Length: 529
Image (tube, rainbow, N blue to C red; front, side, top):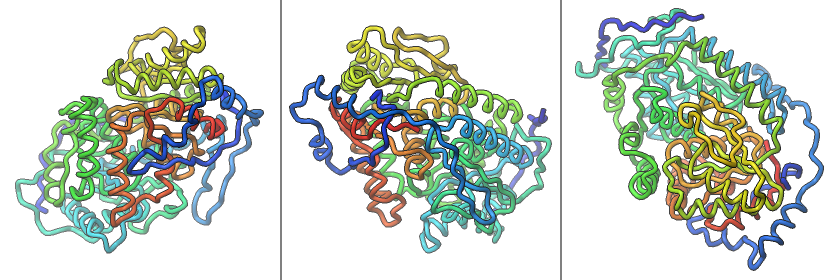
């Protein structure tokens, strides 16, 4: 077992149906500034019985799993295509990712991790800002960690290796070496760090990374980026960056880490985060003010360095890395085995603070009824108002049906809900996200807070990058989701950086109509991943 040093050294000062059986169909829906076109796609005048017949007729024989496809690239480990459900390959790939991640992490000192878009060009002001922050980290002697690709992932280590910067004010002083420091690591190790992943637009490790590991799939690559750190900084980016941002923010809100967090670039972030704050914090109370305040918005390097330096209670490894890796490996293996025994399902997610009387819960109940009438299984990720609505609708169609349930032990404990069969309770949030995302016929998201946003963008990112096959992603509640996705369109698509493509917004449907949900599932043919 790796020994972890929990002591502090001297203060270091710096001076610088079912539908489980059919072929996939590309989503024909798009998020627009108005959702009127979406609602026009529903079946006007079609009753529930007719819709159920349509759902049942979309099925075909379930195919046997095929072997994983590998695409060889010179100088890189072959990419594994696991979009089809291949439990054996998936389990082994996750095990390998966990082992590789932690073996390297144990040998590295805590770093500051930077998330940000691969499409940020060298002539972008944010690229220069990232370089300057890298130079100032060099003055501090604290290494940066990135995903190892282009854009921001190159700019920060590039600046770090060109540094140090001019001296910083004496007021900016980092706390001593953080607790949770592995004895296999050295505080004098100032190499740039990366955990890379092979993607069509991000295939090569950049040339300013000193030590790196290649990870096959997203879940544990993200873990490798945010574990054993002393700060998390997010620059502008696309769906992948939003996935990373909301995952670390959600983990911080749930008490899984105390690392300081910041987003860089108020011009980019305030419209998007302002929309989330308005609907999730101010209007619906789905995110507390304290949790919202965990993320700092900054524009200047010294603001960011000061925020990182002032943080109290920061640890490298949150728990012993060997124990963490062992638990992750065990849980993800159990999760895949459970999913392999269950029929694919339509997964419903949403905020734990959502009221049972919310209109979106009524929509979810009606959608669950339509799906159950068609023989389509449903799934929930916790014991909440969302689960209650899904059970209510499903049992209105079939009094004996059970909804698949996967819960997080710390949050759900021993709570139970009649009609929900809890197949697995897990400790790791990464495992839980895989349980609700894998083997899904569709993802249906009701209004929710940081956890719901994390789950949503995790699926969106993996579908966008081809790591998951396309499945319907339906957002229930126009008044909640439309302002958020209007801001995404404005900043990520129509803004000067274009960190997503127009087709990426075609992945989601926003609606208040349960028949639209059932129709989108039927049109997609029920493919799961």
